[in-house]
Each structure stands twice: as C-alpha cells, then as structure tokens.
Image (cartoon, rainbow, N blue to C red; front, side, top):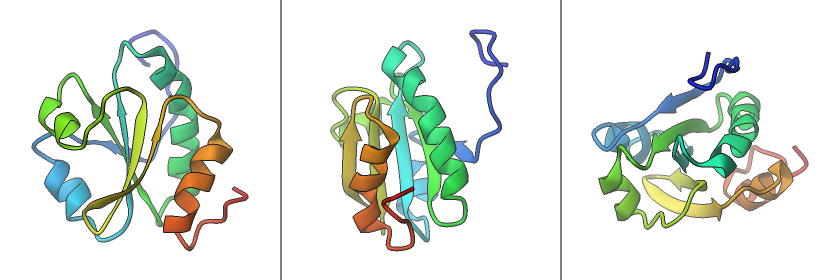
Length: 123
C-alpha cells in the first residue's frame, strides 16, 4: 500500500537516486525515462498512473525510472528541473526530450515517440 493507504499497482520502474543515476540512467544501454517528482506534489500523483502504464507498455524498449527531487537535489539541479512533475527522456546518457507538468498520455507519447522508433505515437 502507498503511504496514503491506497493500493499501488505493480509497476515496471526503478527508483533512482543521486548515487545510482549514473549507472541506472546515464550508462543504460537503451532509452531511459526519468519521472522527477515529489511526494507532496498532487500533479505528480495524478501523473503516476500514466507513467505506470507507459512502464508496462514500453517494457523491454524503454527503462522507466522515478526520482524524488527532495531527496536527490544534485541530479535535479544538474538537469535543470525547476518544477514537477517533469519527465525527461535520456538516450546514450543525454537528455533528448522533456515534458513538464501534468499532461495527457497522448501528449507524452507524441513528445517521446520521435526519439523511440519502436514505439508508435498512437499508443
């Protein structure tokens, strides 16, 4: 259960931290989506089910991770995350696309699809 007492779905994403960011994201073999958020952020909570769906749909093609900005200030500042939620897609260790704020799933998929040739924008 989540801290709020709600059931959390089984997800296919990894929590990353300042200490694991290099190995989990920057040195990853394929594309990595990082969901920068915070426990106190209501739009982040609203986005969680969408990120969970993407983690399942993109399994094997995109590694989906989450990072708590309050606990990982160094990485948050390094990549210029100024508001949450922020989703950043990394490929070959570089940020290639970013979406900030709570947005519909289609807008996220449309933004990232050009960087992920095996993912259809119609997902």
